[in-house]
Amino acid sequence: MRDVTCDILVVGAGPAGSSAARAAAWEGAHVLLAERRPVVGLPVRCAEYIPAMLVGQADVGQGYIVQNTTGMRSFLHGRCIQDMAAPGCLIDRHLFDQALADAAVRAGAQLLVGHSALTRAADGTVLLAGPGGTRLRVRATVIIGADGPQSRVAHWAGLGRSRCLPAVQVRLPLREKLEHTHIYFDESVTAGYAWLFPKGDVANVGLGMLPQAGRPGLRRVLQRFVRGLACLGLVGDCELGSTCGWIPAGAPRPCVADNVLLAGDAAGHTHPITGAGIFQAVMGGRMAGRWAALAVRKGATELLHGYGEEWTEFYGDVLAHAHQRRCQWEAYKGPLDAAINRFWIGFREYYAAS
Image (cartoon, rainbow, N blue to C red; front, top):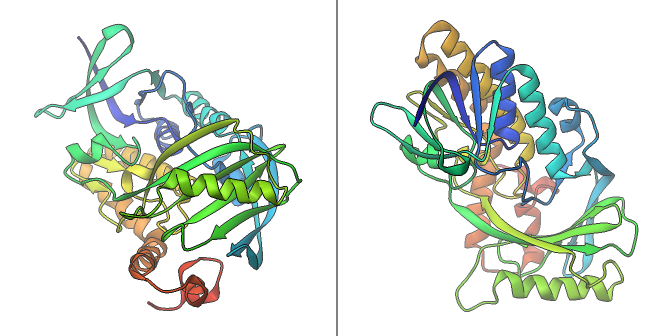
């Protein structure tokens, strides 16, 4: 057992954690960035779409971009119901995460790969399990939990965990060059949607939905969806890879408790309608890192509440409204033709007061 002391311990080196570590280290804090996986960014569990504006905000170059997209097309029962401008990028998520972690290291953070946060003791120290059975006992002034939707740090802090919905995805050959992302709605995808995101000569095809007893599960619905796309000549039916995961879809909740901050999926900052979370992870992580560094510098952890206040001002209303719409969508039992405009962000009716 080796004892380590630092100003800030960041648990998780995804977009939120690396952005937090980078911001805090840039402010002069001594930062440890602990990542349980042996390689940052792998395995990839992501649809790999980001809005174009995030490229500049992330500020790690553009080497991770695979394809630019110009807009988003939405389909209901196979018919295009909206074609909207939405500049974005399909990325190599592994390269993106690596670039953010490398930027954190260049700023001065110490990256520990293959280190899992196991427990938090009564004295506040965190036990990390490293490669080869090594153990580190870390004493940090501030802990930032960026360890995903099943966050251990959130559990330690008594902040609970987000309600999540399941998602599945396959990678398929793309038969037709596309410049738009495609979103598909159908009653079989309950309170969710399916997607086709073009990524060069392949496509990420998946869906996220509310499972219901007595109805086909996600994988069966996805198989049927893929068959339909293949019949249209959009994709080949030769699966090149697959993944699955959990998407936070719960109500907004506190992201600060004592000397603990949460960011990204760990904080439930994912949009509960779209499932998008990379933008919020980068922006929220950066905020968390800045406030953590300020609290360390001033010797006043009560300043950490400034993070929660800034985040709420920045994105709180968006998430609160989206959660209201999610609750309405899950409770709705009628045909989607009569209601999709209220449940999807691409339509003006979505933004009306609930």
